[in-house]
Length: 299
Image: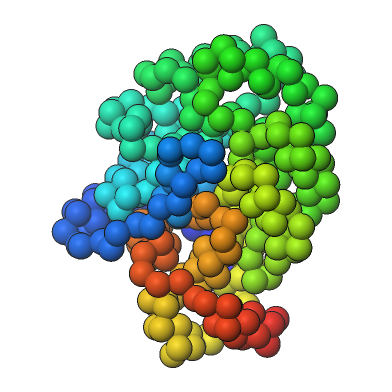
């Protein structure tokens, strides 16, 4: 349950899509923070886009609006799977944005030939060469098929390999992959309501120099059900926070292991609000404790 779940689809989206790009370009967005991908010269902007409903449904009009807003504000990482890989890939090719976007592409092929074919179909849509990141939701399968995944990189089909699951029960398998150096990036859930990743998996990522992307910053909208009707603490302004959404995102970004946090929305105004969390100051440890106390008091 949430007051911020997006129901903007084809008809309602058209009106917003018509005006949002102009609004995005007329404002003066702050400078989006970036963080280095460990072991490389690459950087990621700290707020990314998840595989939002317009991407998944192939709504090109609204997807173009969201991606234009995203790129205008310095965004880079976009998570893509299923139809979303082709929606985003087509727009990236239209915009010639291969140097601006970093796409995490989920692959589901059960053997090496199937993965190669899957990747090639995505490459054809993007009109580009090797993928930025091939990512899988099956950490145990990845461990068994490590040589096949590594072959994708050796074949020049992808630059990076990763694994992602938004559930604590997958942490041990993901940590096994990290221990043997099989992945360059992990994607996990972490927030004030789901802080467990800070216990082991995030410290291990720092130790092994593995990039971290965070999903579920709003717990699929449950977070907004908790804060709804409550006034944002005045002291949030001390770290340039103007909304409850930004409070959650800035909490996550304050962790030194985190390279990027994914937000998922169909609403251009919410996208602008979320991206602003990647600018300005971040809370210190004392403030983080204060933030956790506020949320715990509302739960």
